[in-house]
Image (cartoon, rainbow, N blue to C red; front, side):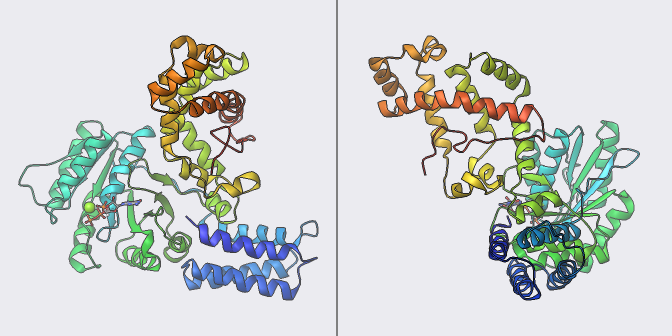
Length: 454
Ligand SMILES: Nc1nc2c(ncn2[C@@H]2O[C@H](COP(=O)(O)OP(=O)(O)OP(=O)(O)O)[C@@H](O)[C@H]2O)c(=O)[nH]1
Ligand SMILES: [Mg+2]
């Protein structure tokens, strides 16, 4: 997400670093490059124009601080202006005073409505709500079945209606009754998609809107379609009135232009981004963090949140105690690795970290899940006593352990070395997350292994 744009902008800042102070000339050159970078990222041209104009005025105006270097000044200004177009804070979902809160999920064909409905239901249930989902897509034969499978996968209830029921409005009303009766506080209504915006679709959606009085009408758009996503969001908003946008497939090679333009063009906020096909791949959109990311400051807050969700806090506190008292065993090490595995693909975690210092060279390093699995297998092959005290593992035991786990003696040796290093590292890791939430979280260069092999 935003990788290309981020790289290009950072180049502009780097070029300015050599300059003594901001001048009309170097600023002109920098602005030209920033403009090009934004256009290449597929940001709406009107948004680009406005951004450049604002940056220029600020840079040339009195607001320039003497204490900052030219590149710092420009970074600060671009950051402020990015936040201005992205919105200054997260746009939270709204809920009705009287449950159930109805959310209409709308959008063009294949944009990710049904998947996002499932993801959002999962997200809501993780955040203290009791969602119910219903599909009113009566046109595509397998559509309702698709949502049913998803609901089962995420363990959330679905309103299926009568077998032959083929009226979107009736299905939705039935679902609302069901929500009220079974104490469900949010009803997610997955609607049918169309290739193009047509009157029939709009009439149906307008009816649903009138009859259900939704608090949220979320427009789901495929980020890969760039400015087309922005255009259709705008059109939906003009005809139906949307309350927010979910941009899906941000994990693909979307250039980020849609995310940067949608709020400015439609006046409606980007509320969530879809970042994968799995059901946990949905994140609330934080404009400030996105701006940080674009400017190469990484997204350490998203990382912390993700880590917190996956790491069992009680266990981690216990682990911390063990670390402090130096009781951290190989068994605990295995536990920690399993927790890390729960965080999902490690590559995506690395992606969120600031590309500064040692980490900037890690871009192409892939820590394979396989590697974690191998380490876990090695520890599995040890006896409980050995896990308690690795000092008793001698040469012949190392060979046996290697055989038992289908690895080599070198692998076992390496693991024991890593374990000793991890003992030190895990202390920083759990200490950072559980200690001060937004304090300094230091990630060791080779996280989560002692040595990074590229
Ligand atoms: N990589 C990736 N794929 C996604 C994401 N969201 C949805 N998809 C995929 O996009 C495809 C279409 O998703 P659906 O949820 O069926 O789209 P829809 O809007 O309901 O489609 P219709 O009901 O036919 O209009 C599926 O293959 C999803 O797995 C995402 O955030 N990332
Ligand atoms: Mg669908």
